[in-house]
Amino acid sequence: MAENFTRVAVTDDAAGLLRTLTAQHGRLMFHQSGGCCDGSSPMCYPVGMFLTGPGDVLLGAIDAGLDDPIEVYMSESQFEYWKYTHLTIDVVPGRGAGFSVESPTGMRFLIRSRMLTEEELQHFGLTRAS
Image 1 (tube, rainbow, N blue to C red):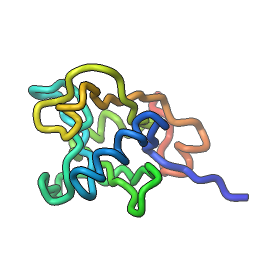
Image 2: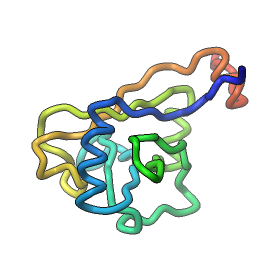
Image 3: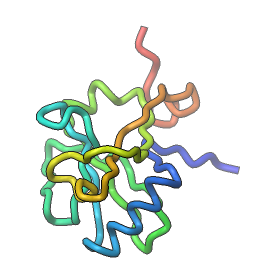
Image 4: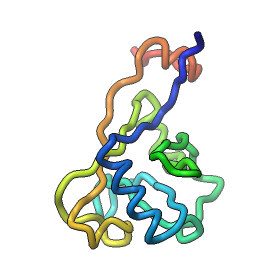
């Protein structure tokens, strides 16, 4: 059986909030912030509100139990620093980032990361930096 290798995932709690937010705002997407203003928060927007360009990398799409998966992007320059990691979008109590749709909910999205396994590195065509 083939393994399903991904660069991004979502916790059950975050998926629940994403279902609520999708009902309010329509289809959503994430862009992993580059560290300005809101630190390194994953910013969640209605599709079309934040425009990606040729300098953005599609990390993958998360399944939050919706009809459409939610795409997750990061700037290409930031991806160079994060390419050896797997990211999981989670949610915790707190004030969300200023323009991210969860801001008024009293919750905020955050990224949990781990290093890619040897099998994941191989799948993505990477080797461990020495």
